[in-house]
Image (cartoon, rainbow, N blue to C red; front, side, top):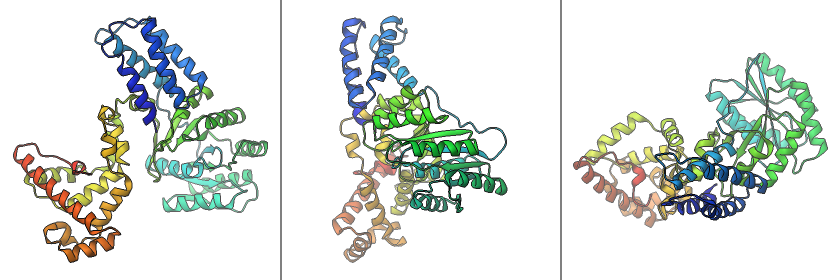
Amino acid sequence: MFEQLTDRLQGTLRKLRGTVKIDEASFAEVARELRLALLEADVHFGVVKEFLGRVKEKALGEAVTGSLTPGQQVIKIVRDELIELLGGAPQQLRLHGPTPHVLMVVGLQGTGKTTTVAKLGNWLRSNGRSPHLVSVDVHRPAARDQLRILGESAGLYVYDGDESTAADLAVAALAAARRRGDDVLLVDTAGRLHIDTEMMAEVQEVARRVRPESVLYVADAMVGQDAVQAATAFAEALPLDGHVLTKLDGDARGGASLSVVAVTGLPIFFAGVGEEIEDFEIFHPDRVASRILGMGDVLTLIEKVQENVDVEAAANMEERTRRGDLNLEDFQQQLAQIRKMGPLSQVLEMLPGAGSIPGLKQMAPDEDELRKIQAIIDSMTVQERRRPQIISRSRKLRIAAGSGSGIPDVNRLLKRFAQTKKMMKKLGKKGRGGMRWANLPGL
């Protein structure tokens, strides 16, 4: 999402290295580059002006910390101001008092609102809650069907009554949630392509009838300033608590996420970071700011590893790595764990300094390539995965046909596997074991 902005900011701040003193002249040049980088990222011009004003005031007014150079001091100030721009601290949902707690989700059509409700329900359940979902979109039956399908696929309960108005549906779902003993009711409201008075009147009536404890606005991070304008309109009509940003894994410029907090004065609670229902996380301003500046995001990376990697299996695999006693079945298992962590390009963004290594992101395989590799291995028999040396040409033909690939693809994978196994065995003898399959050449 922030790749273009990250590259521009890193290039700009790199010019400060070795700077002996930050004065008006040297800061003016940096400020000009920062302004261009932020405006090109589609950050609201008013937000850019205020942001640079605060950075300038601190850069020229603060004494330089003893352990930092003047250039490093400016970088620290920029990071601190980015954190404030993004909301300061992670937010907690306000779910207090008697249950079921009511949480309304609002937004325009096409922003990923319904998917967000399913993801939020899944997140709440994983955090010990018992969510109850309902779509009150009485205008588009497909919207209610979508939530039902998403909810059922995730094992979530979705209310599916036949009430004729949005407010009546919400009230009936609240009663059903109370009967079932569910402690959170998630209300997915109707969206429109554009703001209109009918839609606003409807969501206001729903809010009046079920009295939500929290109202979250879903903003599509790829829309840009349109998302900010729509968020402002909803904030004027409803008691919004904050935002959920969707499609943060996309390739848009990211300016909406840097503008929506400053313009509306409301924080970002969550971020959608992928297509799977599990690709949903608490929004951490400090971590996002560090990633924007190319400083990595080690904490999120550690959390992803803890969530997706079997520690005991990894330890056993490390020992086998030292002996050079690994096979494609091991690779199949670790590849599945790596893919659970999300696209490798996103994982690389979390590594400090990775952005400064030329071509590193381009070296990471995309999801299509990983799917092809996994399909090839899945098309092998257990015996072939454990003893790749038995794979003859006739077996390769069968594997290629079963995986929808060609014999050259199978040969390439087997060659890389053999090379890597040989290399890892040598490193293991030197006491440098523990290499992971993520280091497989070309993977």
